[in-house]
Length: 318
Image (tube, rainbow, N blue to C red; front, side, top):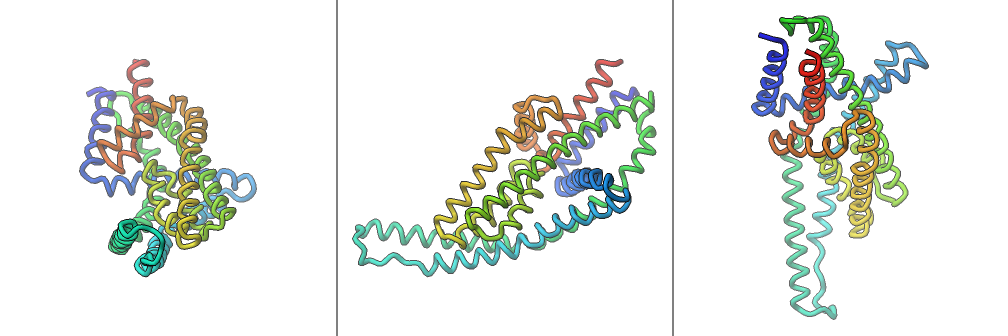
């Protein structure tokens, strides 16, 4: 069996695992992402201090931010959800107003429906609380484990190939370098997104600015779904801070930052990094999301890079 066929089998087997066990594979992929993310500040800090200490410090900072974001997510959403529910459930439009009776009935009925929806969302978040904590622990554990596992794979990579082990190992190294570029570019994008969200909340007076900035940074590594995760507490905090006006402000921040990322930051930084047209990246993300769900979003770009490197190594350079 040739190595090109063997690698294709590896890829198919991996995609089957993603389909059958998306939660576990997602945790491993996220751990793989963060093991590279940690190397970005570690590389910068190593120029200023001891290399080993810089890596430990980087681990503490990045994993500390992950833990902070996930551990605080549920309590903040529950607290803000209760405030919103109490506010809405106690709100009733007085019949003495100049509005027609049918308008008053409609507004009061709408208020009851929104209150019921808020309570339902709150109950859902409470029921998912253990899963969020488990996910935070799993991400931390897998990040540390994958960071150590990379060295083991590097040493034993040639055993994965039969025909030309050195060429196979070279292929894996090139793929890893490309994936590293992608993650490093994403770190820059995520950091800018986190700063924009946090700064906007401070300027517009929405409380929880630091938490929302950190959450935006962490969840930005999950395309599409990340902004939804951030939107839940952000809209709640906007409403509890400034009422309906705060809700609108929070929505403007979310939409504005998301559009800046989608049309300016990500295309410029990632397209330049990977030398792949931004439209191709978007289409691949959409297709993988449709096939594999959340796990597909996480593996879409790595799989694209893997296939490109496979094509260049085994199809063009036979």
